[in-house]
Figure 1 (tube, rainbow, N blue to C red):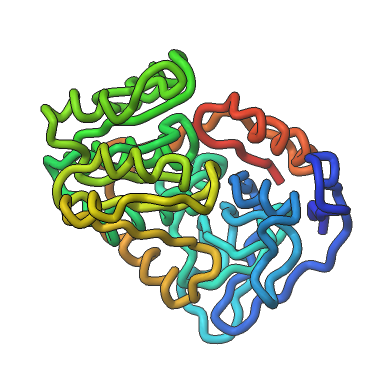
Figure 2 (cartoon, rainbow, N blue to C red):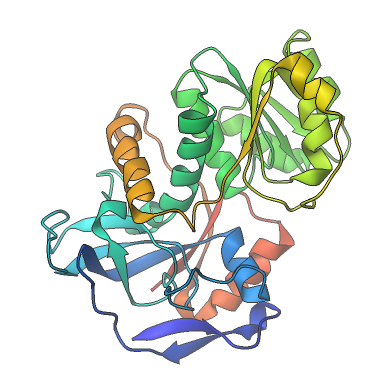
Length: 325
């Protein structure tokens, strides 16, 4: 099969097509003929040498795919051979075939194309797990999501609105802010020209945001604490703005804040299977009742993965970037 491998870690051009053996599904896994694969920030970090795959996982990048199940490992009855699925994988998505744990597969929602389905797993697993399962966002509460025009951000806006929350988001231009509002964000803040703490407090009548989803990390933590409501919850899913900082813990204590973080890739198959089951039960029906659709900015042939990474690093995109196998 054709797969995209990483030569010497470095710029997008280090991604190159190669011929690799078709993987064999292990017990509990299925083999998927990939129709499309999503491109995500962790793929970029892996390409740079900063996010190696877990032990025993292929060095081929790619964390989410959509396609057809063509073979099932022992013990697998669902999904069946021939099923159209999208799947979260720990690696190997940038290829014509990939093995995936059966419990991490979800049916392609009926109204969506394979390309759209490939844009779901990484962001929907991440957002649902962090915002709803861990930070417990409820209807009527306010979510502040940073990077609202990213794949994570657009997903968070759509899901929070579908579950009845109010959404405040930050983005890096007037165009991106307009795109966030078009998706349903109640307030969009241009973080390059506006103070998101002041705007969040203003938009909430001085109460602050109940839940904050942040991929910036150290650079934003003190300001997130200032923007949070009493009993607020801050979910950290990235460190684009640094991993180390100093904060005044008295603010955390006085506001009774919950500050948590997580990464998805190293979690156990069982844990990811539980997230998948929750998504299938609580979120997948929304694709029909709420007409949810992922935002896709650009599509590239698999062999042009380097171009896809260059676009992601430019931060010019709004929504997801997809590779077509």
